[in-house]
Length: 412
Image (cartoon, rainbow, N blue to C red; front, side, top):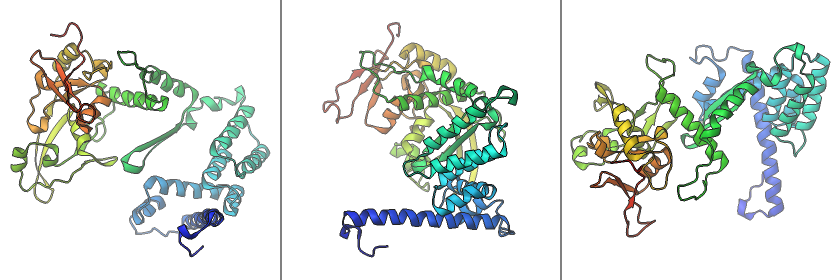
């Protein structure tokens, strides 16, 4: 590698070193896969307390478990596919495309002969080795091969075979979760049908078109599906309770009232809350979740050990939500037309700050505007006529003129 600093290199030197580093990275990855393959043939983890190589790798490095599992999975596939392994170790194909080809060759269409699989393997490796090839091109070639060899007497067509389904949900940067999957045609159609109405554009009441991208609309629709399933309580029991999101936070973090903070002199303010699956989240998001959920108070000692567990408190009852639906008609934020069934019950004065759970302290907000109220300087009040009044941040309106919230004509 060049010993000069990056700023000292000219354009040709920069391009040359980048390509050299890509080659070296592949060589290191190839060596890593070879070593993992060798680990499979030995009892190198005996007595270490790890059930699998991926767990050991995750516990011994700062690599995410998903990345470790993909690496170990690639090693397993290449053990079964020596021709693909040779292409990978030569540097002809990268790890992702090697995994694609090897996976297909291990699970080909049912009526493909060994000779046909060998021929398909060569075609796919030839395509995957091209500089301009990407995973989509390889996947498209695999789909064509599957279609060519699919016959009715062979049973379920490849496109409708649910045993080939795959779904991945892995934690990424900032605690975000990346979702990736491959579904059979029937379940794929089921998902798209359910998402269709939830991801349709929703123009504002004044006719301004929905500014969300199609991808964002689909993501919002998928999140709404999850929320409705959760609210319906249809999930199976796991660990003695129905599926739920557990958020742990310090009492001092969850309140803005100094009087309440003063009552908790030994409680540490961490500046974040914690969830089981994705780790730390912001206090604003934790407060948003606490607006419309079941809250359990757990008293901890100075070492973080639970001393007492209080009763659950439901922040908004079913009758209250029905009354809110009548009063607000849906999301109360100005110009939003989201129906009430898609909304959360938001506390104007937060429940953790002593705000009461009554109609004069609750409003309905859709997910987007619920986040807006918790993460920006927008404010809301219930006016003398018991209707919502919003105040924009000074960055939007320096004078913060009040804006009436949505309200159906029949609301009192």
